[in-house]
Image 1 (tube, rainbow, N blue to C red):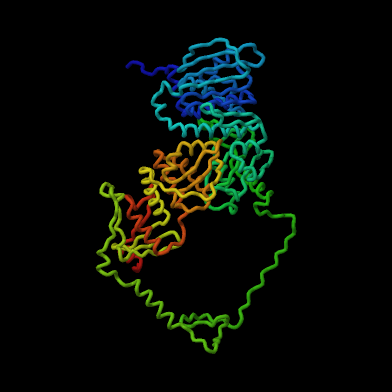
Image 2 (cartoon, rainbow, N blue to C red):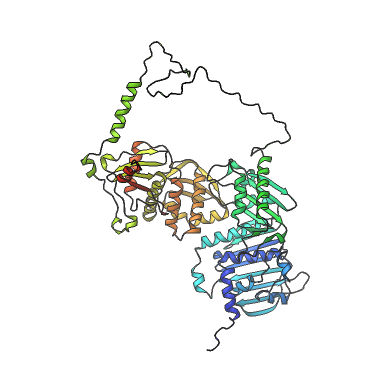
Length: 622
């Protein structure tokens, strides 16, 4: 048998490695920005065209590279950061594996210009698909400029998997914001299609947070700092009254590297317990400084996951630091352990008169007397018999079997596509017209009589299905009605949200939103959908954007379906309230007019039917 195992060519090996390191234009942005940070730059410019498809360029004033280093940086596993295994566990730089530049050079056309400090001339390199096309001296300023053009030009399948420009730009903005937050002492700027998006001078952390996230955060931050010797925690947490239903503005940095950690997030959230409403999320930007030997950052190709040597201690310190910060701002209750507090014992309750242990259901105790003896008042006649008789008549109606005529009646279902539904999504029997009166339970569920037994409808899930189909119809027909706001609202958005809302401007208009660009990341909201109750329109818009982003992260949906789902989800959460008989019956009618009445767009059940036989079995003796 001939030998069949061979070494891969370098260009092919680099393309394979690029699949892990370079997933989208934002990956290139992250790697180039981190290289500029490692080069000790104090001023970094990011220039992007067509959301990174056409160009991603980073210009810095760092230490630059010699001619040899410029050539070597595109070789696989070539790095200036580590020399031994011990170095790997003492990493303080952003990059260290020597894979990023080789991976980028394998899937793009790269132009590098660099000049080390003190040198008279620099070096220019042109690379395509891992092949060096040109290397020559060049006159350039001190520092490095790397331009990555036509990403994935030689891997069309990867290029086709890129999302819309708005989605890709949103990812770029997220990476830019994370690096800019981690290094407030470095000046950053971002230009997209020759338009300035950010211009951030070197500043304090608080100023950088406000510059990136918006001026609304200026009065929402509580400073947090804790130094235990084992680690240092510092940064800002949001005051509880400013917690949002959106989860976006939460950042953790370990040794100035952005990380995702559900474990650390849980430590913060438990510190806020009892201070924020359910399903709301506080803002935080927290930095952990810890000995690099006590962590492992080399867990994931993107280096956004981290392992701690002693997770429990880290958790406890972070939790205590946030709790202390909240207490320092008189936000969380705190105990003074130095104060001597005397707790007076509770006095036992004494019962007046005797106690009769026998229960007499027929007896009505007189009002205002808890004694065991019988006390009568002139002119007072206990209404026991009358009350029992009136109550029985009400209960007897519940035990009457449904009349035959009621069982035969049905409400028609306006469902154009019902015949195409699979058995799993087949619509259940609609309630009988004469038995359609619903009963509301805990402002969450509706009970409705049907021919086969009893139907339980989830009020919120039903609203979500109804609203989803309504907004899908509005988006398809472009017939959404709008109600003008008496006082238009100025809404300041984050840079990522501003890009998203501009991309979805036509779809927002189709469902009834009316707004105009006010410059920068600000819009003026002039109108909202006609059927939406005017309350906090700004909060609604923020929730809608966040839900849209959540859907985009987990589902592959087109813009219209995503927006309809997001709108339905957010408005349905506001529908838990006491309903009149008319409102309950209307909800049932609208639900059964839907094409798929028994499931939400996300697949959750909207209703459950309990058969008469099941009810009967519940009352049988074992």
